Length: 596
Image 1: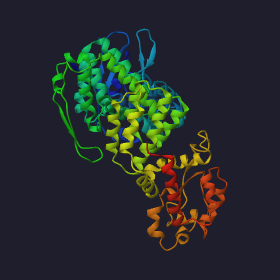
Image 2: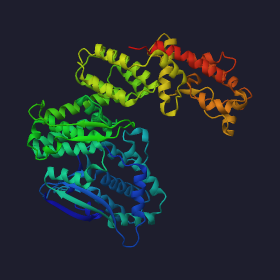
Image 3: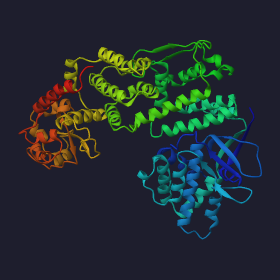
Image 4: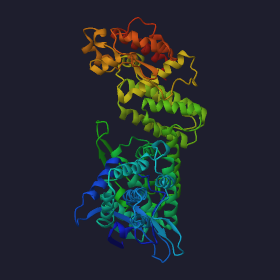
């Protein structure tokens, strides 16, 4: 491995006119948070006298240097270098706005942000050939930013954070800060000419993934091995990874790989097992992997990881049997991953394009049914038709809700769905019904738990789903009922969550007196029961009242939600009414979400 390390000031790093840093499409979106940006700014701002600050390293995949434009592919360090360029853009803009007399002050920054070819043509010093490319250009040219206008809130947030920070500085402060950034901040640039060496170096620098996400490790593993297979494989792998990132935009990419492995191995995979399990799958399935010198490292492996939920350890033995394993080409393996990523993105975001399917997917999100994604992905990738898929979703919705309400072990639920990845996707219903029936809680248990469950803030969407479905039945199950699912419709606590504070009494009324002597003891037990919840649009501010429920009734009476309007007909609403209403909803629940 030939590496050319060089410690460079920012003015030197960006000062070579015919060099352009390219962030390739296979890299993830910009993702620095506000805290990281402030720490970065303060590290530079607090430098004294001739102190220097090492910002870290970047890894560049370089070709032979020429007199024309030289494109340096960033294998590692894109977050850091993008932040530096955002900072330079904001510094330049602030100095222009201040109309400083010495234009060289901002023009020197502008030169660092441009690359020039041999014919005098210019382009951006950093080229984001990613999903962020257009938004970066727009943000750099804008003076006012609305976060809602941009898909990548972190990228827009970085521009906003830096601009707000600079607004608090005087022009003299900015001159000094710009000097420190250009001359006292150092980056170690590691130039590597061979792709496989670049990805190997990336892994080494990051301590074999201890500071990286599973997605980053898997990307590096795939591209590094693609480079070993040849340039054509590497080019194809980069394109496929860019497509994968596009499909998974706005989703949890680490979760995707876990569910992809669950669907592939037909067994539960914990978060800690994702990286080793992926490498084992790769070595087993990819035909070209037999030529890799380190393939033997993945034979006879034993992974023992603590259960994610806190149960027994998972112990899995693996042995690579090259002759017995059904192998496919590296290209086919990548296509399978990308096809699965496309389906996962559609499932997670609820955008399959079929209204009925998307509605069921929204319901599963409200219930918090991520354990189903590996199984559902298996069915969709295999080409299950929409009509049959709707049947699966409807049955799954009911089954998962029952298990969640009855607090059945999440890892057992996930193990069941992993096992179901073995079924024939062309005729899945008989086996699905059998598996669901065997693992489904009884009506008695479901009704009891439904009435007595506490729908706290972390699962309030589950309560919303239940209330929506109960309300829909009242309206004749008109699935297009617009009042439900709207953003301004929320879950309302009839007896408020807080009743003792002065603010609560001013805005909600004197519920403590209204509820009686046992209010302190019963309120924490019953306030989050399903019977104390309803759907309501807008906000209630009823003012102090001896009978705060009576003050709420006038607003409830105007609601388009029938269950909420029913409350206006009640003479009182105390803990007894919560328990009665919870029992009524529980009876309905056994009908609306029956056992398979």
